Length: 296
View (cartoon, rainbow, N blue to C red):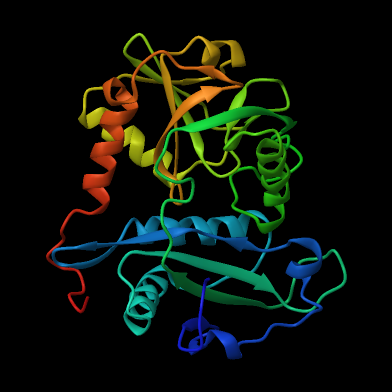
């Protein structure tokens, strides 16, 4: 699904065949989830492949490593260039890109001495599909921000997301909604939440959620579209009385939510602020850039 015998990945300064790459089974990342990663999207445009906000993603990757004491000294511009070359080598234009920083063999709980970086890419459609989602409130909450670095995109944090996703699907929903440890709205397992009420967008404030790059893009687009957005602490009851809602994330892009806990939102999706943002986001990420690589 993700690679074949011709697929190449970037591993510690070299391009190698994916099916020939190896890793150490004593890696601290494998045993403890002590690693950081990113998800980046590339889009085909009239002027070549556009890797959307590549620099911002790699800056967050470096910051995630710093926040959890993983030594990582790669240059952001170098990683941006490597990513473009990786897409070229694999003849990919519409693609999902996964950089992963993982640690060397270490069975202790101390910071690693050395780390590796792997960057892979594959064709991947919208992660949550293209239909409105039926979401269910999870029995799992987001970890308390004093227990982890909530703003870091850490491998081990996603066990929480997997548990919530599996629970939601087992209960007949498409996706989960997690609250924070105080019972306020937080986010989806891999996406940020926005909801609309009386012509205004609302989204949970930073502090108990991952500061999504797509979330930041939605805020930029809302400003351009003259849409008012409030960020704050909101209870589930406020979402239940909303007119509409949507999730956003690099993998999910912008996708409408049909219902929460089997209660449907009253506004038709095509008439919502979320639909307007969705269209603007799609146009933005596929916008032609004259300076882009033109080999695809």
